[in-house]
Length: 258
Image (cartoon, rainbow, N blue to C red; front, side):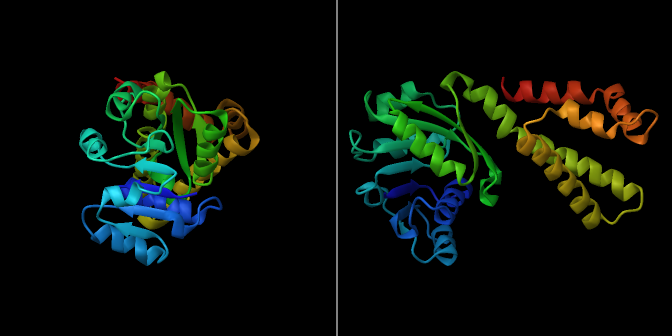
């Protein structure tokens, strides 16, 4: 299976690196195209077998899957300059906000297209990746799920949920990082060195996520386990609520969906 990636920026480069570390695509079967060479050279340093080029058409000619990892405002221009084998190739777009109806106009109504929204943790193989499909078979959907499950967790959702789910995952990772930053500041004020505070908080967040993902439990259940009557944790939880913590998170995510 040959994969072409158009764009070697943060997302395109991370996807290329993730595919190389997976088990489904060989490095030599990955071709990455980019107009400049600096990022392509970085990919070559990561793995010398990754194929690189400055020519988008050359990259896609023999590809089974073509992944477009360019900015949304460049997508139409990039796609319309190419001759795609739309009856044979699976097209994957990483651009947010462009519906399938627009891709149909640019590529054709019968093309198999996936919209895909990873988050920046894909560089660590820990992305929450959202996937919507158009004109895809169950086998093709499973193939794309398998590819991106090797870079974290992938989930197939209806296109109409993409904007809301993007607010939860792609934007939401920034809100988690904001909590880490704020908690670090508190730790520093209490006398902990910044580097140590960052490690403590980041590992605590990672542990909290693992409790949910590994046990399929609920946050309320896990919170109850550490909030003993009259204890220090429940005092902190109540302070968060007095300050509007839950409301602020809800409002931030809803704002990202507007």
